Length: 348
Image 1 (cartoon, one colour):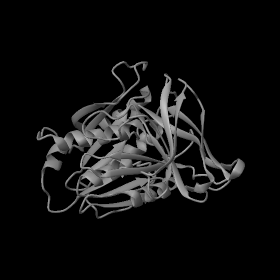
Image 2 (cartoon, one colour; image 1 turned 120 degrees about the horizontal axis):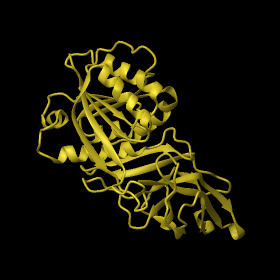
Image 3 (cartoon, helix red, strand yellow; image 1 turned 90 degrees about the vertical axis):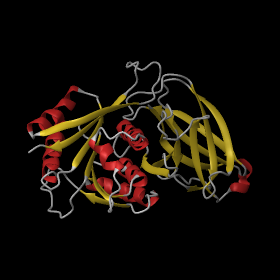
Image 4 (tube, one colour; image 1 turned 135 degrees about the horizontal axis):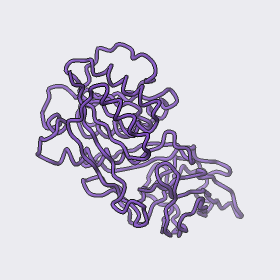
């Protein structure tokens, strides 16, 4: 899986005869930004009206060289568009963004935030990802620009979206999650996501299933979580909220009895894994005991620390699954990256 990223967000420059040029620097990278798309890639960049995104002000095709670390795009516009609000959209031509049980696109497209077409104006250091969920709702999620991995969408998050689509499309009830989602409860499911980052997993769940979802992370993620909640389109009866939760601190007492705990790609740090398991233990003291759904992409032997800690804490996996993501033919893993899923409950 690869992502179009703005290394430098779109910026406007005034040219001769009051013309305008929108410049940006991008790369096509993996989720952690540690590798680049290996092949030449045909991209289409568009400047669109900020209020009517279907209205294209300028469009240009580019060929991004394989393994390019930084690729500059420049789109010239006539002066008549000066002072308009606009966005820049960059995508692989003819790529899809629908999650309907089929494969995700190999390269995920990117939208800039809205900006004025005025000299030296620049888009915010945020980008937007847009995906169409199986129920037709639009999932819109902001993430940071640049090559930092903080507050970015990771592969496991997209794996979760496909996993939800798969579970909701089947009539089987072989796993506890399938049983939970096949029931017609009188109240919304109560869900908490730990280490939510941008919040894409919990927000997607709230758009697909009637649920009260609490997104939690450290304080520096709260702004982007609240921004993404404002962009969300929850299902009828769903509600979203964000809260700071540090796993290393004692969990404040809560009267909420959660049905489901979501954990997406949070186990890569062995030190924080210890505190994560402690937090899961505290949340699992409730009755009835909540179901835990962990999804992750194997990256390092240190991932095993989390599973060892879970076993020692008497969490038993009661179901497992995997989702294959789209990949380049040159990937070392010829089967493509897999997102592994584990359902847990605390055993007495």
